[in-house]
Image (cartoon, rainbow, N blue to C red; front, side, top):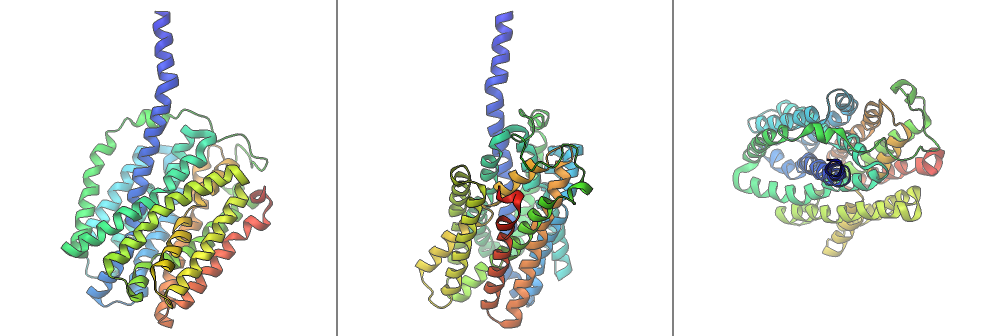
Amino acid sequence: MAVESTILASRSGAFRPGRTALLVLALCFTLALIARGLGESFTVFLLPISETFGWARADVVSIYSLASLSMGLASPFVGRLFDLSGPRVVYGLGLTLIGAGLSLAAFADKLWQLQLCVGFAAGLGMSCLGNVTSSLLLGRWFGNRLPTAMAVVYSATGAGVLTLLPASQLMIDHVGWRGAYHWIGAILLILIVPLILLPWRRIASGNTPAVGSPSPNLADEGLTLLRALRHHAFWALFSTFFFTAIGMYAIAVQVVAYLIEVGFPPLQAATAWGLSGVVLVVGMLTVSWLDSLIGRRQAILFSYGLTTIGIGFLWLLHRYPNLWLLGGFLLCFGSTIGSRGPLITAAAINIFRGKRVGTIFGTISIGSGLGSALGSLTGGIIHDWSQSYDLVILFALINVLIGMIPFLTVRALRE
């Protein structure tokens, strides 16, 4: 009996946690793929919706902006809901909101209806399936390896763009944008059933204490949100999320429309931007590898350098449209969308870890949502006003450079 007990304990303690951790990682990746892939798929819905109603670019982009805003503002509440109710409730709520929102969007005939369904409801659902929930759940399983695990989850954005953008364009070509939204929403609602039947008690239990060893800038194990708001690292991380998101999403939401105006066919433009998903995965893993090789600050600054070069390629593409410049843009800009996220997430959780880490990190993540909303909306307004993408690209470049500044000046992020 003693030998049998030892064997069983060995099996449960040495093997199952490892396998379960990988399954949890796969679950987080899949749900993040759905959330981010569907969020970015709006780039291929933009022109069909505009053509259906004759709305200005800024009006249509406001739908995407509201989704980003909802996703960001909901982050602290998602973190709090996770702390109180666990991942099953958060993930189930997320799928329900996205599925119902997209299904109802198929029947919309006014702007506010699309803003409510795709912007507000789907945005809240994407927040539930997003990085706040993943980071908190994976932090229970991966400990010091959280940056690597989060790199995998963040790369779900790329995988989602690669698969769901061309798939959405094909659906639009065959059944229109209304039919596409209806079928996508229905599929998500069906997925709720297998999701809630997963062994959530085991998934939520975890296998490791809080993330890593204490940081020299560790705030306090009992830190509250109000005290976190007075910590210099909080606002440094917030501003990085905010300004970087402004710059990236001023461009990202209009990329497919931009490529079509340059001269690429719609499906080719959607597929090209979808291919950024491949290089995004490579970019995620490369930046995480550089983190261990040259340090976190240097790895993050390297990714900002690539983003800047990619924006330059995009500006040249309108003047010299060719596959080489398009490839350079996809390689440099596409590979760095979110590539800094895993490292920034790990730094935030390590600095502010404790019982309220979900609420604190969720509040920091508001910066990303606000920046995405402001960047995409402002980019649309600038395009409508100037009838050109030049000022949009300049606006994006300035904000990306501002987002990099905390890693040059703030001590907690330089070390």
